[in-house]
Length: 213
Image (cartoon, rainbow, N blue to C red):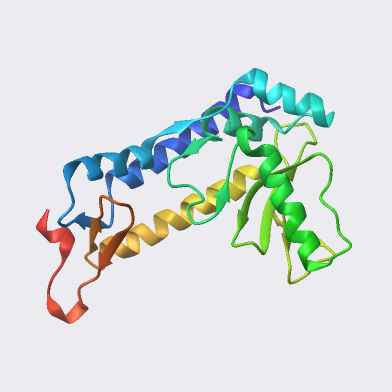
C-alpha cells in the first residue's frame, strides 16, 4: 500500500527533473541584464505550496479528501511549480475557488448540460475553452479528466492517475528540450518591461547558440 512518504518522493522527483531542465536550457541569453537572467531562473526553480490547514479547510468545505499524491503536490508545489503547466492558467489552493468559477463559466458559455462535480479541483484552464480537473475521491491517486467546449455535454479521462498526468507533462518538456539542444539551441532576449524574443538561427547558417557557451 502506498503511503504519504511515497507521494512525497514522487513530488520531490518531479521538482528535481524540473530543476535539471532549468540547469540545461535549450537557449543562450543575448542582450539580457543579469538581474533578468537571475529572476528567470528563480521562476523556473521556485517551488512552494499551501499550508496543511489551508488544504484541510477546503477539504472540509467540500466534504471530501483529495488523493494523497495530489495533496502532496498542493502542499509542496501547488502555488509555485516552476515551468510546469506553462501556457495554462493554473493555481493551487489559493486559487481553488477562482479556477472552479472559471470552469463553470466556460461550461455555461458553451451551453452544455454538463456540470462540474462539487468535489472537483480544477488543475488548470487553457485559453478559455478547456480545463483539466481531479476529484476528491481519497486514496493514493486518482484520474485526471478534461472538459472541452468541443464536447460540451461530457468530460474525458486524459490520464488514469495524477502521477501519470504530471509525468507526461514533464516528459514532453524533456523531449522538447532534447530536440532544441540537439538542433543547437536558440538565443533568448528578455526585456526589462516584460516579455522577450527568441532568435533561432537557420540550420544552414552554421550558427549554433549552445556552442557559444
